[in-house]
Length: 128
Ligand code: NI
Image (cartoon, rainbow, N blue to C red):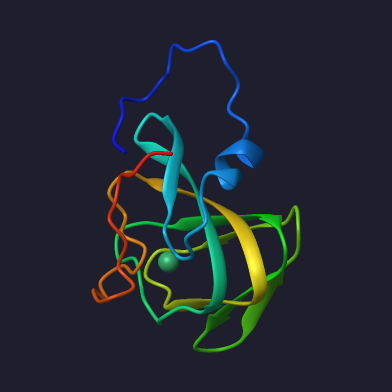
């Protein structure tokens, strides 16, 4: 569902409530915007695909669960409450053994699969 950013609304955004409305995996949903940046929630489970965002860094904040982000050399493990920023141009592949609830913070227009378009590419700019 598309909607305008409720920037002048007086109600707080409950991340927990937003997650309760989202059951699909690997389908980011926008919950807020700040200038040109979007806060997105997504449920992840299993293996994603290798991809790169040539023009933007990408911030991962783990709301619940544990996420591993693989790089061509090494990986980083993020537990609940931990934040990590993947620098632009760095190839990465998220992996979650068990379901992870994640918040992504990135500029409007960044695709989840970067340049690696395919069946995992989610429709962009979908609000929840
Ligand atoms: Ni990415």
